[in-house]
Length: 215
Image (cartoon, rainbow, N blue to C red):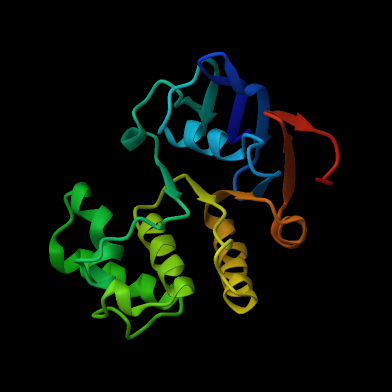
């Protein structure tokens, strides 16, 4: 298995958030973590990305244990609901940002970012400010910034929750086109979205995996 999560558990004080979670997925798959708010979906995402510590369990990616690594050493990219874009940078500077830490020269970083502008259907938007973009456009910029560093796994937390149907379908189309070269996990509460794009659907309820896909 490309991603293997074994016995993942996390508590805050006496409150258990997730308990004994086992998930596997193959390379090139798009997996949807489906569940209502508070079911533990985002906690799993943060644990995979290395943004929170875990109490028990282990996470393996491409045959390597990553659960004891720092977030920046996991070859995992995460797009949060807030997008996390830098308002003082242009669109193209935002996309190219992660390459700065890979020792790539500025000219090459910007050239590569231009390629990703094409991929996300925002050619000609490179010099725009983030504040000039719609929510759907900002989501695509955040997606490009995560993909440009070539992660082994892409994590997205409710990527379409604030978007209209037109932008939602565009993001879904981009993700299904991209998954052949990368494995993707999406947190969603939208059953129909999970059915449309998920190769596999894992349903959460009260911190545990549940049967079926009804909420």
